[in-house]
Length: 296
Image (spheres, rainbow, N blue to C red):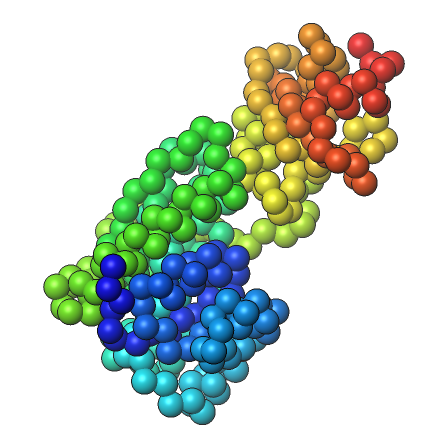
């Protein structure tokens, strides 16, 4: 595929941004990268001789754009984590295109991938959107649906969405730049939903919740913050679990057919894989043999 000739300025700082930039470098003429201080080194390593700038917040971004004379008429933003002021947006003749990993206006905000799993959505997707001064309210260039697999985790769903995002950027940015695609308003803004940034405390398992919700949390919090609890006096991270119809007191641990069962607010959870603090990942059966010999 031939590179789009118009130079672009890339904004991104997280792992999704890095994965996206690897693709963008192959298909677009990247003038420079704007990231955050914590990721400047790895971005610089990825892009070779291209200029990499680091900003911590909107004020520093505004100052950078005032000092540097960038030639790009278009910006691409993926997983940046810094609010882009309207003054900065207006410096780009064609605006700044954000690849947002949801079907806007659903799941606006900081963490649409995790919340798609947490909320039990059957589908999500990618929206290419021109950013404005509000949160994920800009006009759409395109969006495409992705069905969520029943066993999807945040890392596995992220990989699928990055691939979808890359294909949409390659196909639709040239069409937008050439004027063949006109941005449109988001449908049904009154039905917008919002996400938030996760905190470490989100990973503490509340066994009073229904087993179905806790199972979603296990998949959604895979990687970080992890679904944490205490079993047999050990802090563990639950890595894989499934729901079974079973009446048991919330938090009560039992063993049935060599399976590790924990009661919840509704039904029970079979813990298939877990990782005790300081130990390697193990199966529920291995944990039983090592730590729960006296439980029946």
